[in-house]
Length: 188
Image (cartoon, rainbow, N blue to C red; front, side, top):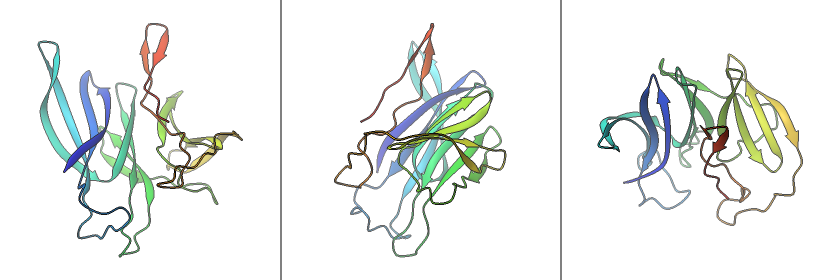
């Protein structure tokens, strides 16, 4: 098993992360329900001499590639819920609200594909998600987690990755406010 895709956040003045723990032995796109193992792990941390140490860890749900945004009082974990090729289960994007732990499926606008590596952010307390970069689409989620397109711009970033067909321009980490600026790690 491998641990990857760590997403750190603060909730009620405690430091947490959600990450993916998955089996590296399964050939790509040959998942079966029996073999598929991709878990989202929730970890709580404490500080020990300036270092972060895990104080507890728990299985949150099955899923992939978690991304988290938090305002310090609540957090939203956005993740991909994969499909099993043999069983015909469909893929979807889901949201877990913390601290309530209520789980919701994101309802996309008609004809909008899932996208890749969604990046959540809060704007005036409302959950938004960067859907993709080609075209550049920002979704706004309502109280029922139905997504509406809030912003749509055509870009010239449509260079497909050979291994999955999605654009090579992808999401990164959440931005952190540092002084008067924002710092984040971006992916490409």
